Amino acid sequence: MAFFVKNMISNQVKNLGFGGGSEEKKEEGGTSGPAAAQGMTREEYEEYQKQMIEEKIERDAAFTQKKAERACLRIHLREKYRLPKSEMDVTQIQLARDDVDLPEDLQKMVDEDQEEEEDKDSILGQLQNLQNMDLDTIKEKAQATFTEIKQSAEQKCSVM
Image 1: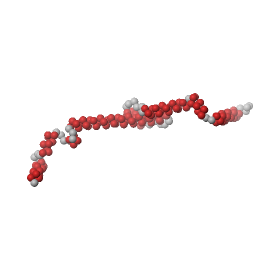
Image 2: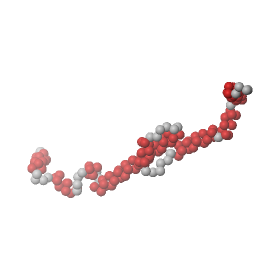
Image 3: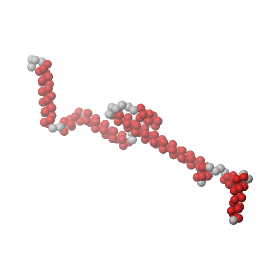
Image 4: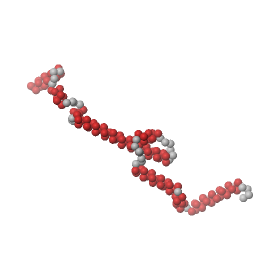
């Protein structure tokens, strides 16, 4: 009972503004705020905040870099397939501020595709395609072409 009465009187004194135990604790412990709520000193809390900000900046930079790489890939595909350009992709690359390239794996794939296309376009590629074709098909195409040329020549020149 004595504890109850003492506690009640202490609370009434605090409410009147005559001071009490909690105000003394604030003065001794320094400032109470987010640092105290986290169970850290002020210096520890400030260091923690700096570390959190640095990590956020690093994550944002990595995210921006990835977005720029994706935009670079989209630009490359648009050029390859002759699609209209997108200003959003150009802007994304400019935001990255770095020399943005395709990721290595994608670059290897693109290089392989270009080599295949160049091989198909070259004379050797055409010869390989001819080897893969059936000789009867080649004869039929040649005969059809010859017949077309002959007919067009007969129509143009009545002497033949």
